[in-house]
Length: 117
Image (cartoon, rainbow, N blue to C red):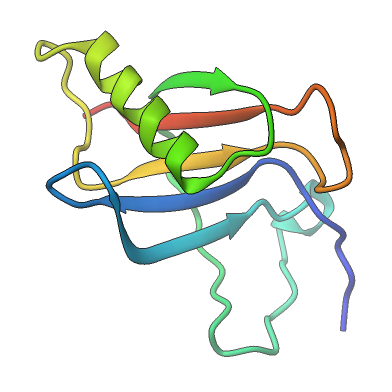
């Protein structure tokens, strides 16, 4: 019964298939605002879970526009290429992050994050 509003970034955990496309399994994560982090309200929907993310170091690339799945896949491939084979990062998932509300037409910010191993 508590409204918290939207936070940024909205992160989608993507699970890439062998060919680089995304599996039809994703996890959407929203940041809990600071004033609720010590004691977050309990979700009323069983499909909503509160999860504490551990500190992580990421490799990231940024791009603009209204991001679609193909954009995240392409920028993930570019980031993979830029990092090369000598950098260790998690290959079983990556994060697709968006920072803007849907009604913002210009200056949009999207990112792909690879988690350093």
